[in-house]
Length: 105
Image (cartoon, rainbow, N blue to C red; front, top):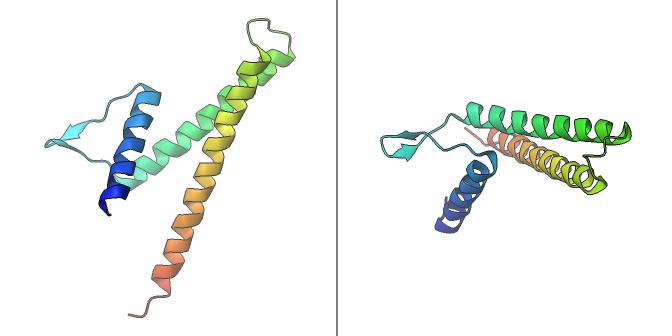
């Protein structure tokens, strides 16, 4: 990775940890996670956002006065953006896989 991509990746990681309220677990002074764990965590996060959105929509539809329309719309947009980002990452992974498979040995 070049320096710009590396700093962007670090910034995204710090935003992710800030948003989820979790802290990275250092290993020998650096943060290391398995790609599979990162992928599973991201998918669980997207699933959680979608479930929260559905719950808010249902509560709003049932007349819960503690839920405003703006809360429902913001939650919907968050889950939509997270899902779209996940789809784009999947597309890039599939594209990279196809590129690697088509390389001559």
